Image (cartoon, rainbow, N blue to C red; front, side):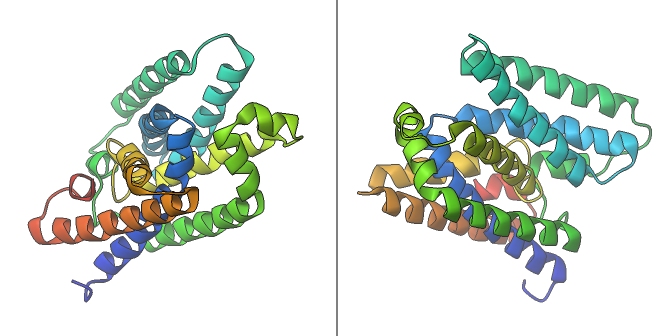
Length: 246
């Protein structure tokens, strides 16, 4: 299995994705943002479609669109009287509709579409792997710098504001990184199931952990294990990697 370069790339990308998803998933679960991650994942479909339509790298266009949608949801939620589930209910179908329209306008066969929807061990290129690594490193630096503030915001946002923490700024970067991690995961897990890799390890970790630090450790371990064994099963059974990972 490890004698094939594509499989090595997929395993490394899967481990990176699993670790990042497991870590950020803790904050997603604590802040009750599970459907937020799902909305970003489905919204990235329009980014992929835009990439095919403009003949640019769908991976990059999905990152750009995912980040914009993520910030758009956050802005509309904080600046209007609409509840989060309502805002997500607006953005999710609209962004998917735009994606479907763009796919319809794109001429020719689009063989990569299925890999973005359900993930594929063959779809991870060297450039994708390098970009994923860069995002992971930058996010790790960000998380180390604002870890205490993010933790405070996750448990008590009002208290964080009262202590002078710039909640808006941290939230903005958090949402951008969440969208980037979601898009990174579409290569191995797929748009349809990436939100599960963010939510399930963190939710499982919360059930068995006795402290916040334990929850983070368990969640990251669960994410990495799921990715590794899921990709291994996908390799030997020729099944979509997204389903086997989840």
